[in-house]
Length: 150
Image 1 (cartoon, rainbow, N blue to C red):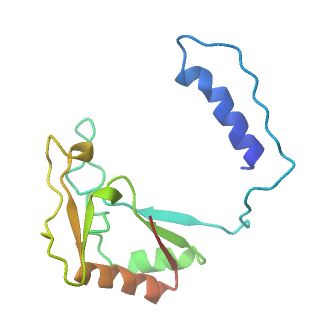
Image 2 (image 1 turned 60 degrees about the horizontal axis):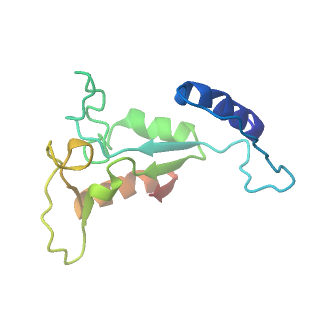
């Protein structure tokens, strides 16, 4: 979907997003310069941080799909990643700013996410151990993919 289509979709959805009061506005889009380009083969996927306890309306869909608990040795995962070659994998997501990286001489406690009433989106900070980082990095090296952290 081209930029013009995305822009049109966004602008037409504004009436649904802000249905109360509105004013007439004029939007001018300058298409004379290209801001960025990606080729037709660009494919990107995200592995998020959500723990299995992340639920919405009694539905807990994340299960074992987090950076922290995904089965990195599952042969189907490796084959799926390789099938999208080239693939850019983004490790990050909603709880990215709540992650402690247990690397080097870190003195921080390396605890898993906990459900809380005071944390961002209802979770405490979580931790990515050096051992887990090595496992994640090994998967990407083995499958020949590009890793991108947020």
